[in-house]
Image 1: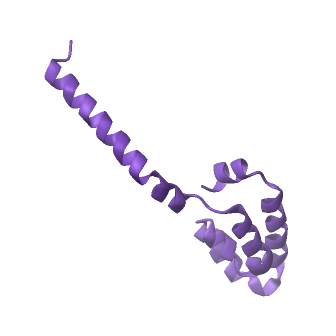
Image 2: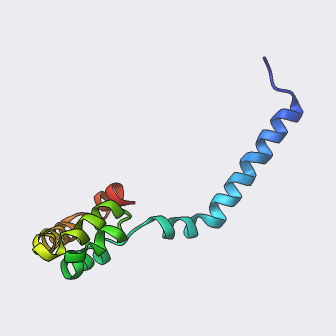
Length: 99
């Protein structure tokens, strides 16, 4: 089964179009998916009691659990240590886990 010249030309045009779209919109797409490690760490340290860092990292179920138990101060303690962990993580490992 071979491709005709018309089919090959159509495939090449689609690949060119995809490359153009990717190069044009890649900065916009990357900025929406990547989360900043420092912002997450600061949110965890200062607002970890309320789970704000979990909402920032798109983990709303965990954020709701933090909100439900904020009165015990345990989420604040956990959030503080999570903030320290975020600060000690490399950017690439943070992106792999949370982006």
